[in-house]
Amino acid sequence: MKATFFHLAVTVKDLPRFEKYYAKYFGFRRARTIDLGDGAELVFLKNDDNFYFEVFPPEEERPYPMAEADGPHYPGLRHIAFSVEDVEGKLAEMGSDAVITLGPLQFDDFIPGWKTVWLKDPEGNIVEITQGYQDE
Image (cartoon, rainbow, N blue to C red):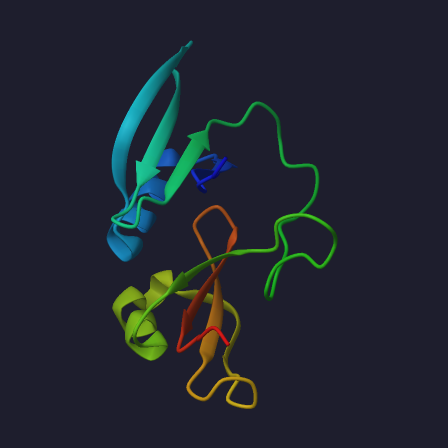
């Protein structure tokens, strides 16, 4: 039976800021809101590629600082990535919202024209923005 990728679940402290960032720069919009009671809500954000964030409110404090550079190097989620036509153009569009943690780096030795930069989103999650990747 075929399985289709559905969503990435995240827990965020500042939902309005997170939602605004991903709407403005990556085309996400609110697809569904579920009332969890006591003023808390579960929100699904969706972009035109049918990629969803399932956004939860926090129930506890973060136990350690967020990773830097291209994300944590221990087992777990390292970063999320978006492909764009022009990394430099996307960085210019984002202005001061593009909090670079690593790069931009060229990977022409592997794929001519492949370029990547890593950023922090408003919650401190690492986001890769890449151009020029091609399958073998």
